[in-house]
Image (tube, rainbow, N blue to C red):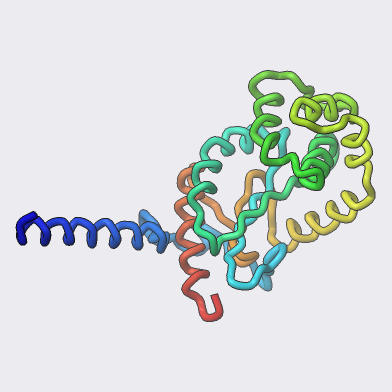
Length: 220
């Protein structure tokens, strides 16, 4: 290898390292978001579950919500690239009526360690495949779906009826109320900012900027 080739090789490695560092830093794309337009500051807001050294991003969603179903394939690749200092938390909104059975299913599946295998699949089963009813599903119907992914149906029905889910509903409802959540899907950054946006991609752009802001904040 000549000296010139060696220098070019070192320069290439250096550029690759710089690009990698840039990516890891999570430098947001697009213009900085504007308060009151792209996001709402939440007075006295607090994270759902603060974890030292991490920026929390909460998604409030519902399985029966068609907008959430359309958001899911956009959200998943974004989540996969989040750095280690960002904690993503999905919360199924207990908004009443036909939202409740699938919200209970979400928290039961989380307790039983099934979310990774079932989250996307349940959206598809409801909105694309129509294998489950959007309204008035029985616990047995829902458990039958989860049985396809390793759940014991009887155990799943019992998990859905666990009083601990009612306590979780109360906690999630309190978080939604203090955060001003009025619809789904809604993203909330560190309990401080409720994201708006003109499209799903725009919501994620705004969220990236707010994550960066929180990361660089004193104590962040």
